Length: 157
Image (tube, rainbow, N blue to C red; front, side, top):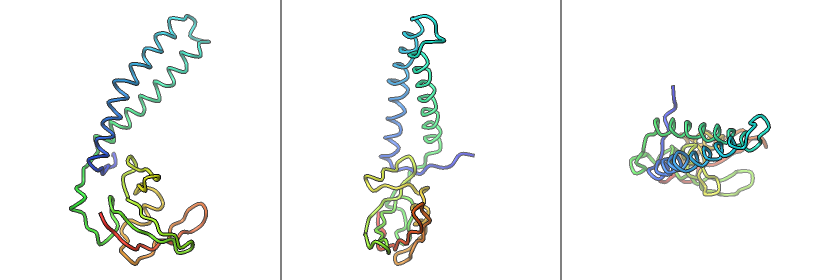
């Protein structure tokens, strides 16, 4: 059973663009490299051929993964989501009780996660710890460095 992937319209569009690029730009290029390497003769010692074949497998796996993600994608309208607790697509302002640092994250699906842009996966330890929490609640999250205590200060969309 495949997991439902909740996406924003933007995230869905980005995945579709990536799939199109892989199928119609990347794969034809790899196929061309394989053919050129094959024309050079003995394949058993042809590093270019083996590298291109490995790349073909990698890209085929990525295409398959994207197809599954898209087949199980569900678009959520962020305006319809409850802001009384942390859910997927919530923007949540949190305070680390130990360091006193305040940060704002948006919880997204794993395929849309981008920590540099403040988008963390609902499947990450922090994302899982924050899900379902309300303003004022403290999420205790086990991370490799120990236990984080994060206070939910604000929830928005």
